[in-house]
Length: 290
Image (cartoon, rainbow, N blue to C red; front, side, top):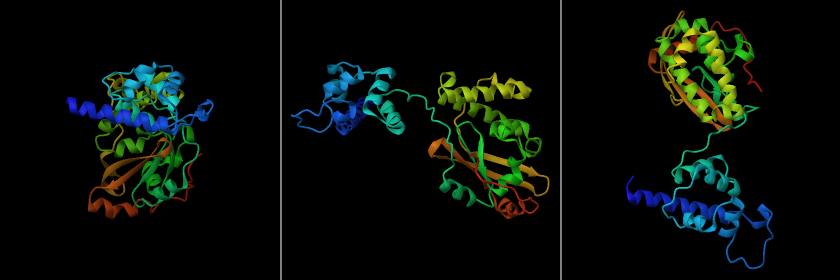
């Protein structure tokens, strides 16, 4: 990054801090409103004291000077300024620091709009995952291909089913590639959720331990410590009734740390065969869990 680019980042940080400080009224943080306030919001000195940082140092930060605040100081300022998760991430990145790990509570309810979006993907298989990688909802084509309803809710987890679903293992072309990829993304999600220091991280750690204990391949591949960001991929399936199916697996992030996974047909032949997936499907309740 050039000097000009670095200064532009510091200026953006300074402008962001001033705007968020102006948004906070004294009474929001337990201070008396006072009589002589020429500008809205908290004074610099008040914010610095509340965040536990030096007034001069904070003034320099708002002036766009070249200083390097620690993650702890940034976290204190974010709390004092009452930044939400998106604002905190933006703040950390502007300050040149890695955003703090996210460990939002797992969504207890799937929004109706997401359920409608999920249903609209038919005849393409689609399903919803939460932050624990549990499958929360799916459409009939996903049931026909992946049999989610056939599993106990405790086992209805994408990472678990990659290894524990015999038919899926047999159908998936280059299953080892996709299984290794799943483990690398699971390890990355563990880090993103704060590792063993957070409830969400510990939940994923328990899932990783369960995979290790039950599948020798998972145990060996996890020792390689590969990490990969959650993203879509191409996936080919040799279906016992429909023959070859080619998908682009697309991952869309939704509020509440939910993810919509869509298995979109990659060619015309697959698109033509997909309506046949559900021909022999028995009626099943696909209502979202939770």
